[in-house]
Image (cartoon, rainbow, N blue to C red; front, top):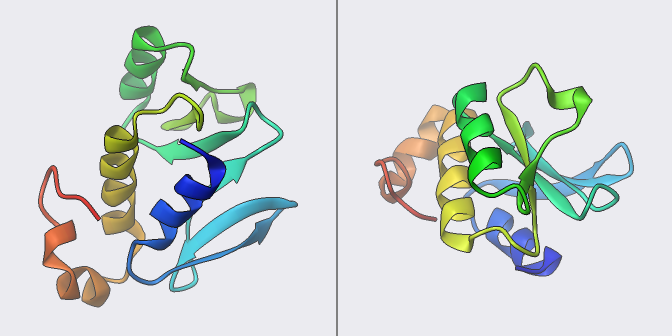
Length: 120
């Protein structure tokens, strides 16, 4: 994927707006933090996961794509290199995150994004 494709994917989720946090592209859902890109860090996107075991498994399975820094060590977060991340996986992971941070009313208005395995 390219950075522009990831940005378009992020903005395809209802209520998502782009901005800047700490000089890096960030995205919010109706004002609530969604995720951000780390262009200076191997051109990666920050992906929130359910737990650190999931992160460790992703890194073990594909260390060329997934990694983290000491800053994220204690968090269920993985950095995914934009150039090599699987677009289908990324879309599903971001949909899951969107469902967690979007206002409940917005989630209810977009039922196709609420089931497991749903896509944006």
